[in-house]
Every structure is written in C-alpha cells, then in structure tokens.
Length: 235
Ligand SMILES: N[C@@H](CCC(=O)N[C@@H](CS)C(=O)NCC(=O)O)C(=O)O
Image 1 (cartoon, protein in one colour):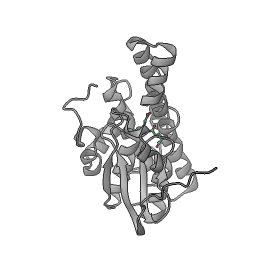
Image 2: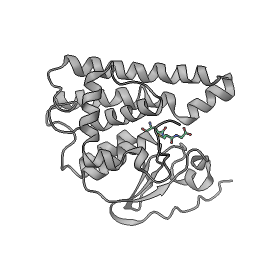
Image 3: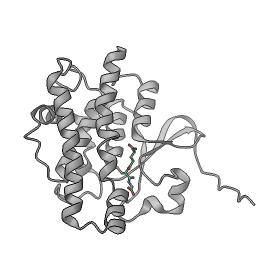
Image 4: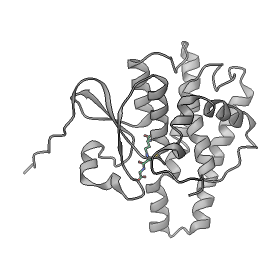
C-alpha cells in the first residue's frame, strides 16, 4: 500500500522564493552569489549540516538526496536541486548580467572549468563522504586530511593549468566579466581556506579568487559572513 505523500507547502506565483542554505555549504555559496549578482532576493532556510538537519524528515520532502542547496520556486512545483542546475536555471530565467559567454566554445570552457570544481573536487570532501571514510574505513584525522588535500589540490592544479595556458583567461576565468566559472572557482578557494591549503602555488587561481572576493556579491555571501559561521577559517 502506498502512503499518501504529505503535500509540500510550495508557494505559487513567479520566481524563486526560498533557498535552503547553511553557512559552510560551498554548493549553496555558489547559488547565493548568483542570486545576488542577478538581483534576485529569496528567503533563506537554515539547514544545519553539522547537526544533521539534512537527514530530518521535513527536509527529505524538500530534497530526498539529503543535500543542500534546494531552491523553491513559486510555481507550485518541487524545489530545484544541484547547484550547477540551479545556476543554469537562474542564467536562463534572469539573463542579466550574463554569467555565460555568448559563444558555444566559450560556454563549453566556462562549464568545463566549473565542473572541475563541482563534479571532480567538491563531492569528494562533503560531510557524507568524510563520514563514510571515517565510519566505514576507520580513517583517522591524518588520513582524512590527506584525502581531502589530495582532491582539493588536484582541482587547484587543473584549474591553474587550464587558466594559465589559455589566452581566453582575463581578469576573471573567461575574459573580463564574471561567469559561472568564477563562482565555482571562488567556492574552491573558500574550500582551500577551510582545509588550510595555500593558494600560492596557483597564482592565476589566487589572482582570480581575489578579484571575485573584491566583488560585493562574493564578499557578502562568503560562507564566513553567514549567520552561525565561526570567526576563523579553521574548522
Ligand atoms: N553536487 C551537489 C553537492 C551538494 C552537496 O553535497 N552539498 C553539501 C553541502 S556543500 C551537503 O549538503 N552535504 C550534506 C552531507 O554531505 O551530508 C551540488 O553541487 O549541489
């Protein structure tokens, strides 16, 4: 017998209304920056990942994958999920300022740079992966830090190699305007801070990250400026 699903109280109207977020979430940082760059205001709902809020029943109705971000639109539908998909949605629905280049090759490059972070680096150090390694394979702190540093470093190296060899790199990852790649690179730079990795060996990444953090949207949405964040980068 099927149990009737509780009806979620999704609102009806136009545009995003609610973002499920947490100060430490890098995926949600990406979405918050895009929302702010595009001037879209949303209500935020805190999902404390350290307290396990992502596993609670009411959040499972929001995102059964048990991760944030999730963006509720007021079209009456289920929330959007996965930061990259949400960024692409925002780009389509709020085209100004554009965060993807006008040409197909440029868009492929921006998406490629973004995926180094979103697909190949970030997922390897999220809480559920860290917990699995410690609980299932008994990783101690040193082993866990080695794991995290390895995958973060791989991403930083890859970004640096792509950015430094390509004349398409400008003030930002792709030319002199912000793109989705800068949003992803900034989240990678925040991760480097969290995990105490020096950006000095990656001068192009460091330069672009600094240019991003000098922008209001990146600075105001920085994880360490969110409610509940600790005073320092270490955690
Ligand atoms: N690929 C997903 C990653 C989502 C994700 O792993 N989010 C983290 C926070 S940045 C999370 O909610 N983790 C909860 C957990 O690992 O238990 C995206 O980009 O949205």
